[in-house]
Image (tube, rainbow, N blue to C red):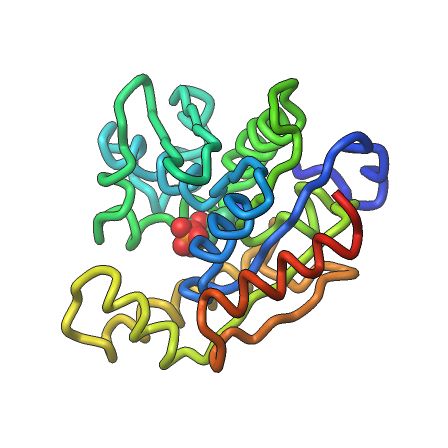
Length: 235
Ligand code: DC
């Protein structure tokens, strides 16, 4: 269903795309928003799109563990993503779901929904429309799991962010005000396993990606590193 990476070298020749993939809780979102803000680029959180699709399935009583049921309905929701890094937005059928897509219910169901090839094919089309949109600024920082491998395989800057599971769990738990760091770590590890093990567009380090282990670094240090990489390829 997804387009083969090999024939996509002509995808976005006129624009800077910074492709950032990595595990849950590795600091992708904060890093990407910081880099986009510093460089005056747009920002797209593709995880939010998978979460929005999942929210809609739950709202409509679709069994998220039934791939055929999810596939049958996944063309219906109207998703809109705002790409201002200072205030990214996401709506489904006109409803602001920015908060609703971060609930435990959505987090617990997003991996099975993301494994459905029809969901991935639809969101791939939407992601490429947003990346290629005729708007200013044209450059964009895109975060997800398959950005450098499938969505924009010819992106001039590709990063693969990871961090120790314990560090990721304590960051995530702090963000969410959750007390149980061990439980958060287990949830992160089980999402990693599903994200990496699925047949369609699994989480992998893309060809040409630079691996950054963020465990020992502050957010500002990681942003600085990525800004330096982008500067070297030229904006
Ligand atoms: O980045 P996040 O945790 O908000 O992503 C939520 C889920 O969406 C994650 O478990 C895997 C899936 N996802 C994906 O399969 N492909 C992407 N490009 C982005 C996210």
